[in-house]
Image (cartoon, rainbow, N blue to C red):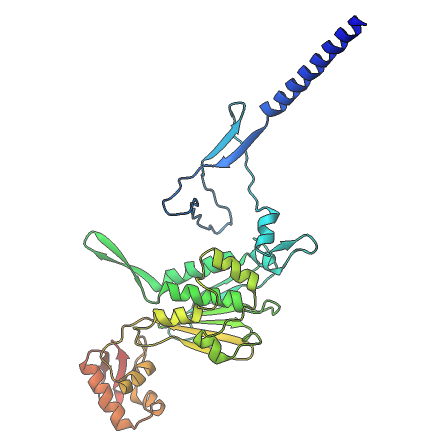
Length: 346
C-alpha cells in the first residue's frame, strides 16, 4: 500500500512538472508588441503622429516598437495594425447586427461613393488649366487632396532676409471649413461630385443637396441652429480636428474674413449649397459706394465703365467720379483714354 502512495506521489510530481514545463514553453514563445513614442507635455498621455498621404496610397512610416516576452527578439517582424471593433462601435461605424454602415464605407480606402471634381480656370470658364477628379476613395483622402491642390494655387512664399514667410491669397482655414462642410452636409445618395471651381480671384464650392429638414437658410447662415445630415461622419471629422465644433463652420469662415474688403458669399437652393471664398484683401479706406464698384472690377481683366455703371445703384457720372477717386487712392489702375478707358484692380 505504501508503494502505491509513493508511485502516485511521483506521478503527480511528474504531471505537475510537465505542466509547468509546458506552461513555461508557451510563455517562452509568446511575445507582445507595443508602440514606443515620446509623450509630449500637456498631451494627456497621447502623442500625435502625422503621416502624409502619397498618391499611390502607400505610406512608409518608421515607428519604434517594444517587443516583450521571455526571450530576446532576434528577427524582423511584420506588425499588422487595425482598428478594433470596440472602437468602431464607439464611433458608431459598426454594430454586431448590421455590420459596417455608410459612414464606415465613406471612410474606407476604396468605396463606391462620389468625391470631388476640381477645376482651375484661366481668365474665363472657357480656359481650363487643370482638372482633377477624386472619387471612390476615403473622404479623408478626398479632403487632403483638395487641400493639396488648394496650396498649389493660393499659397506662396516670400523671402525676407534669411527667412521664408508663407503667404495666403485665400485663408486655408476658411477653405478647410468649406470643404469639411461640403463633405459632412452633402447628400450621399445622389451620384454627383462636390464641384470646386478655382479662379484667380475666388474659389466656388458647390455641394449636392440643400439644407436638411428642420433648419432655415437664415438659421444655417447665422449659425443659430445646426442640423447634421451625416452625424457619424461629422463626429469623425471633429475627433480628427478637421472641424472645431459642430455647426460653427459658416460662422468661422465669416470671422476669418472679418477684415476683408470682399466677404464670402453663401447661396442656398433646394438641391445645392454654394460657398464663394474671394481673394483676401484688407479693407482699405473705401466708402460704401466705392466698395460696390470695387466688387464689380477684376484683378485680371480690364473693364470699361459700360460693364460697371449698369450694375450700380447710381448714375454714370457718379460712377466715373468714384472711379477717379479710387484711382487716386491707388486701389485701381486706369488704362486708355476717352471711350477706350478701362479699369483694373491694382
